[in-house]
Length: 427
Image 1 (cartoon, rainbow, N blue to C red):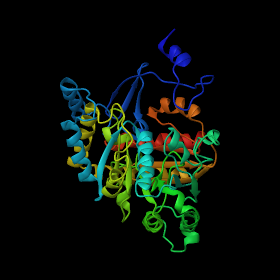
Image 2: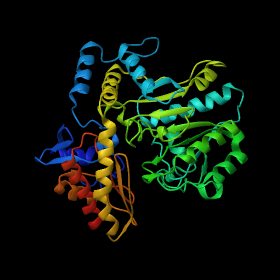
Image 3: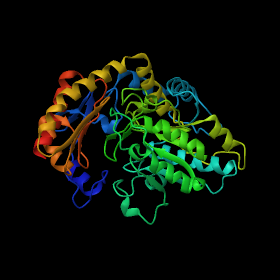
Image 4: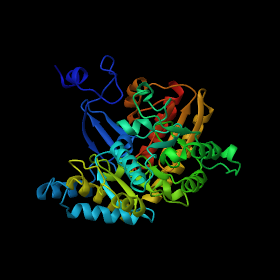
């Protein structure tokens, strides 16, 4: 049995069927923005390995930090102990984050960061005497991960988890913000989506612990970009009803939208922010949930007096070292100019797709480019085509999209956008 045959019969890949697993390529090494396959094919990665490898692959600064830490201390429990990589990373995070987010809880993955944020919100509300507040509000078309509580705040229809309806906690969903990023904001609540949120909080605010949403960019729920003014107003509504505000920045954090965080497009700060994906530069799984003093001190001021969560590999030194090196590259480099160049080039080179039959929309924000079709596109059909073009793309739903590494050079980016337009013409 060849390795690919073993894989097909025994290894279960994300969002695949074991009876019809679809095509799988054997990757043997990575370098820069390229994935090298066993058959000699080299593909430019337009996905940044699910939006995480912002510096490309095998960056010497990150690899060096991990190797040095591996020799010194690969892991130690975080309960009752700490270490320099965790401290260094925390200092870098606080220097980048909006003012007011001060308490860092390290965890394992993006979905776990969301679970942690939701537990923080409930425990905070109970600590201040709001024991009825155990539900959540979210906006439709959102996606927050595949773990149990995170699934409950994904869109109940389009969020990939509708088959678990009845098993998940019932949450409150409000209208997707209808005004797109870049469009003119209107103050009418019926037209800007805030009437739906206001009505939800008015009717159910006394049982809602927090509003959780993806700021500016809804990722796996549809790659939709919405107006930041919605978030400014949502902050005020949450405050009026005693509801915490959680931003899920797992996909948008660390420069993807052209700002360090999508939050930076707004005038406000959430109570809790979830970070993941690009935090280690795509080197290994790691995440962080960062809260305000209000939330952290509220939890600490009442029984049981401690936050009830503690992953075994919390604050793993290897991951902290990788994340510290990745953030250093951002803080010491010119990623803003790179992302701005990627944005301008993708906007120009994807524009011709608007004329293709079946294309519903083309949109670009930061290092995110999307061709939205008027029909569902097949990733299984796209894979062999994109491999032949030498570009790794993985469409989902109606979207052919790219989130390239920030180090992608113009010639390679042109191959990515060219492949996207080609796929839009044939799928």
